[in-house]
Image 1 (cartoon, rainbow, N blue to C red):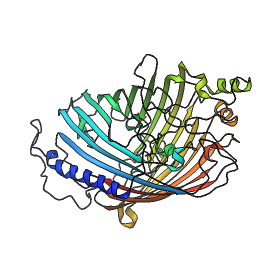
Image 2 (cartoon, rainbow, N blue to C red):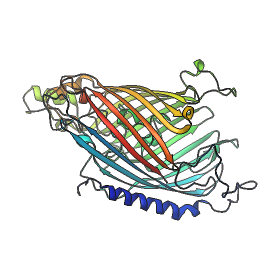
Image 3 (tube, one colour):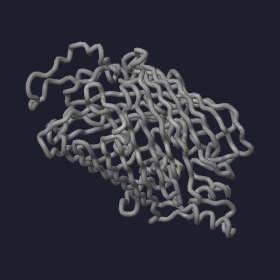
Image 4 (tube, one colour):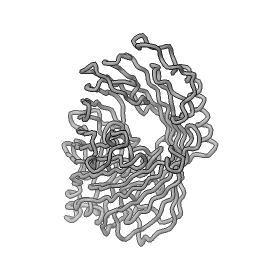
Length: 492
């Protein structure tokens, strides 16, 4: 495969210019004549945005058109210096001065095949390219510091189809509620009680384990185990996408969803196993749109309650996975010189886990969030990262009090852990697709991340932040270290 080359500043500027020209070229397509079912006059598209609701993209998007065209470009720069490291392995975080940059650009396309308020049909097609690298090639950590990094540095940077799905709404009532229109949901109003069906190529974190405080590496945190539940080994290829189907039921205050999706053929692989009868990832989630602290938080001056949510997730993966305990037993019996998880891989292996996700608005500026995750961690970490248990809490604060309401500061603490079988495997010299110091003196991997994201103009944002990491790769013998972060982001 072509080598994933480092990206130059000129290349990034060129891609931004191309994305800008696409957005401008298609802007007119997003403002068609009012659809035939629309009651009454449509709002004028030539009125300037209200003072209190500024445009947060380079090109405004219509709230009533059948088409959706938008884009984004995200570039993250990180570095670190030397840290305590008496030994290293093939998959270690390197004890050297490193500077690395990544870049991800996405073109979002959508079309309402059936713009019906009760039975809406969306076609979503997105294209993406990802380049650059993470520190130490995104190895040596359970909580890797850059979510935008593709975990296989040999992949080509040629643009690829990231999402291609059909989203069907089946309304169960004529009562409608507002919905934020965006690249994954084109209807601005939906039935308050409805089924939603999605089929195609997708990314499961677009739908499951979503958290408005910690999900988006473009405008929020950048760590893998802060933006997502680290113990959720969700079905995906190395770029984070899979093929499957989702069935969701939404009611006024709660939702329930189920997904079945294709697993990769090998751990962290780019190719998916299309035999769903032997390999699949199944996911369930229940969402209650009421925060854990709702009874303790004062309502707004208007009397409305502060927003919050609790989500409970579970998953079961079937794939050609190995067994950490069996791999250690092979090593201790003298059958192999070093534990090798691939020697115990077999079809029929099952990995399962659970997750809790919560968020709570406290004031007009302050929001808190948290996650807890657990999996059996006996079978091979296969698709996301090497974490057996995780606990997270943090929050963000917008800049309203200093007259910059679209700025945001955030901080979070996450503590990741491994179960005993996984610990022993690494202790005796085994390697996974992310970890492998050649030995292990176990301790929890603790990470603190902070950021300040500044809104510069329209869709331009800039962020500074950093991560302090204790026991990188769960190894008490290594670290700590600090990783400064700078991010530039453009929304088209």
